[in-house]
Length: 380
Image (cartoon, rainbow, N blue to C red; front, side, top):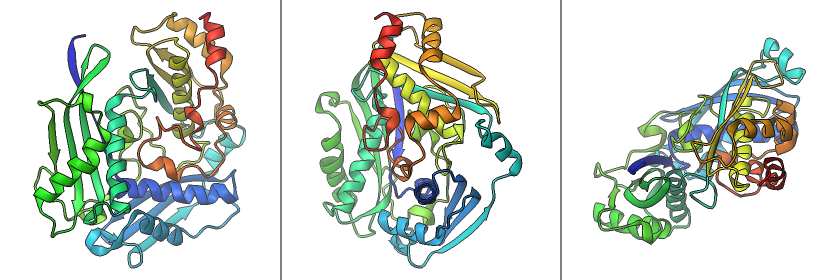
């Protein structure tokens, strides 16, 4: 394959699109906590001084959307209009209706909540079985948020982005070609101070030294200024960072976002299942990397198609892998919900820093508990 580059990006929890993802998932969590069988499909829009929440909710419980929004903004750190929005003074508007009874007819009997294609990916290039570019991009912005919230660097504001370009030799990542950090900051800080602190406390803390050489480019706020940020600088919308949420542009994406959707929506739950299956396949040594694909029809429980692509790294035929998957896994919406224990308030934490590659409490799709069964069926 020779040498080539792969680039992935991530954003902080203060990025306006991620604010919207978190609002949608925070409302979902509040409902899941009181009514695990509630139906939720929410979209959020954030702009100057305004958070607008709209969508469909069917539940017997009550939650205060305005209170949830303000608590979230405060948690992120948006406590002053100079930062982009103020948790106390912003307007919160909600436009909620009940889930369509036409859709509910199919979901009530165990069918998928919509049609669509879902994908999951895993690769053995990192211990988390994730692509290195997106893994590093997430870690950089997570560290940027950490030094802001712990006041290691006191002039940072909530908005920010990262981008990492990794050079590969064949299937192996061999060096970092470039690192880009954009960090929202107080108006009085100098570019020299910002560059120094971001490189010291973020880049050099996160990126492995052996992957950096004298040709690695490190860019910090390349426009020279990032004071206006958050919803004041850019309108945010739920679901606009789907590549950040998944694998950083590596592999396919069905197009459906995750945030704001309860687990009957296969856009979310089946994508989690695809990652779960893909990770277990790679952990079992069936292949070095794999993409698992499912498709569904609205109201139908069984998937319309199941596929697995190993990119030439498989130890057994792909046809046999698919046979194994059909034998070992239940891909119906209810089967996925039960296997991954998805009727819980676990979703707000997924809305930032990636839905995959995080072996943390609640991320049940990251557990490798099917390795032995896969090995046995594969004859490995």
